[in-house]
Image 1 (cartoon, rainbow, N blue to C red):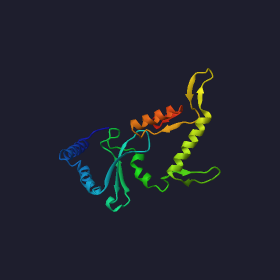
Image 2: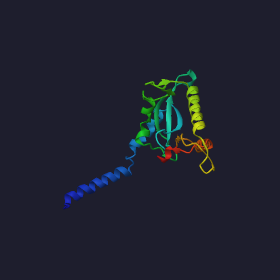
Image 3: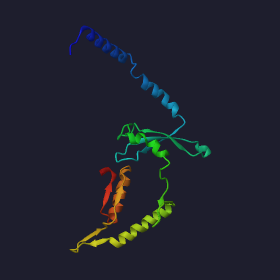
Image 4: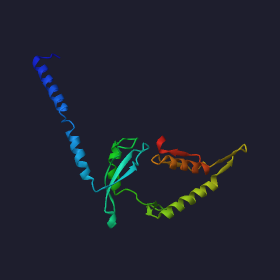
Length: 197
């Protein structure tokens, strides 16, 4: 490519103009405007720190809700953004995390325990007591039926291999430790976590 005097002057002028704009502080004007408007947009909202539910990274999110607690008005989520104080994501979110407001307001979101009776083709809403009792009953039945106390050589192994657990990584270290200890205490062998997927 041949550089003419005219081309050189155009490129030089453009470079000087761009650097001058940056030196005068005009490049951050949009960011400054957004930062000045943001407090007013969410001024009356209640801020709650939470964890993104999508994957094993466990990004921190700030959930903003509107609703007058003094008048017993139901709080509604109006905005979700990354938590800049969270050491995992430092305020950034992936596309799924950034779209989590749509997840919260989706009409297809399951909010209650659902149960499909044997032979039925539809799920029915049940109470938490029913759901937890049903899970505990099925776990006990399976463990009583399939628990292995000793292997073929007579060595005590205390294994339960027919049921497994898939734990979330969006929980605290303490909750994860308790989950692991309880399942291992029951003899459960297949234990997996979302962080390894």
